[in-house]
Length: 171
Image (tube, rainbow, N blue to C red; front, top):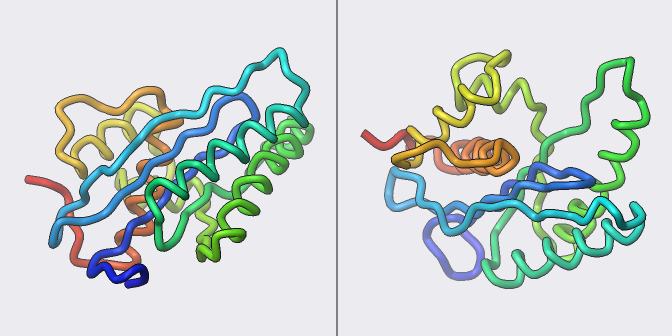
């Protein structure tokens, strides 16, 4: 892989305008290894533009710290009832995409149902099922909280599996 490493480091991002999940994964041979997982909490009292600046700064710092080889971002989806939500989410996703591309990271857009199908076994898996599944994949004693972090971990696992098909869940 790049940066002189044998195994890739993958950044997963579940973008949001109030809270964005992120996860940085590598692999130890055929097992996923969590470098960092968490959420970026954005102050809801700030204007959207200001929250986006904070999000950009935080994503940039995560990339600088971990030097990932690539990223996986959740694609924008929306029910027809909430077009404004999709538009706002698109702004947050665009900021994350921009910060990744500024660092020359390749970015994979992942549909939520596709990540759920690969990681949890069903494209219709609920939040709790995704949390349990990523915990099993990574050998965690408890599911990651909140679900934004679990989704980001699922996205990173999805990308890691594409790069290293031999990666499997911990026993």
